[in-house]
Amino acid sequence: MIEFVFAPDDVARVRFAFSPLWEMVLSLRVLGDPSGHALHLPWVHAVRPRLRGLDLEPLLEVVPPTGYAPDFLTPPPESPLPDLAAELETVLATPPDVVVAELLSGDRVRRPGRRRAEMAADPGRTLRTLVGLLEHYWAAAVEPFWPRITDLLEGDVLRRTRALTASGTAGVFGDLHETVSWRAGTLSVERAWSFRGELAGRGMLLVPSVFVWPSVSVMVPPYQPLLSYPPRGVATLWETGRPAGAREEALAALIGRRRAALLAALATPASTTDLAGRLGVTAGAVSQHLGVLRACGLVTGHRMGRRVLYVRTPAGDALAGGQGSEASASTRGVPGS
Image (cartoon, rainbow, N blue to C red; front, side):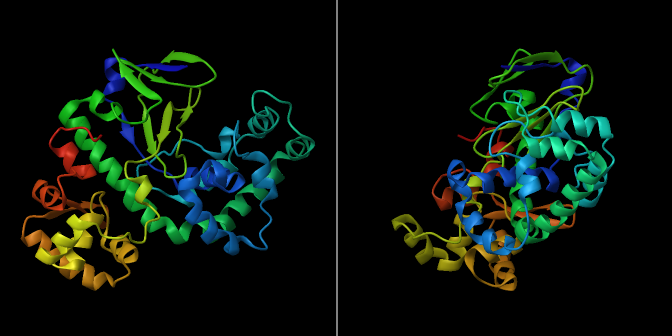
C-alpha cells in the first residue's frame, strides 16, 4: 500500500498536468501486451503498420509490459501545458549515475538482463538513442491521435477542477480509481510495494493519461509526488459511432439525427475537431449544429487554451436520457458514477 499524508498546505497544492512523454511511455506497455489493454486494441491495429521499419527494441527493453520502467523516462511534467520537446530535453539531461542506477534496478524483483547492462555501460549514448526513438515513435504512433487524446484529458481536468471547487479534495479523489481512496487527509493507492510519507509542502501532481488504463501509476519522493490515472470517458476514446437505440431514434426524430448524435457524443467534453472525426462529418457542419444546440441551451463551450471544449448542460443531459455528462455533473457537485 502507498500512502501519501497531506498537510493543509499540500491540499492547496493539488494541481493537474498532462504529458505527451507519459502517454508515449505508457503506450509502449500497451504495444508490449495488447491483451492486457483491450480498450486500446483499435489504436494498436491502427499504429502497427505505421511502425514498420522502426526498431523499437531498445525502448521495449526498458519499458516492459509490466513491472518497473526507469523513472528518468517519465519526469513529472513541470507545466500544465504539454511540451514534448521540453520533456525530451529533461530526459537528455538526466545525470549518468541516475541512468545507470535505474537501468540496472530491473523491475524491483528480477535481475536486469544483459541488454540493460550493455545500455548502462554507456548512459549518454543510451539517452540519445532512446530520445531519438521516442521522437520517431511520437510522429508515427501518438501525434496523429493527440488532438483526440487531449480533448479527453482536458475534459477530465475541467471536470475535476470544478469538483475541487465544489467539494474540496474529497471531490477530486472520491471517484479517481477503484484502487485509490481518500480518508482523513491520507491518499492511499493499492500497490504490491509499500510507501508511507508526508508530502512536506510539495503537494500532489495529478496526471490524467489514456494509456495508463486500466490501472494507475505513482511516483514517490525524491521525485515530485505524482498520481497518473485514467480520465473519465476513456472507454469512448476510439469510438467512431454506435448503433442508435430506441431513445436515440426518438431524439433524432425530435431534433434531427446529426444533432442527436452530437448530443450523445457530448457525454464527455469534446472539441469540434474530435466530434467531426468521431461522427465522420466536416468541422464546419459540426460547428453549425453546435451553434443550434448552444442557442437552445443544450450545450455550452469552455475555452481551454486555444481550443474550446463543448459539454452538455443539465438540460442537454435530460434530453439525451438523464445521464449526466462528465463536466456538468461536477458543476452540480454530484460525483460521476
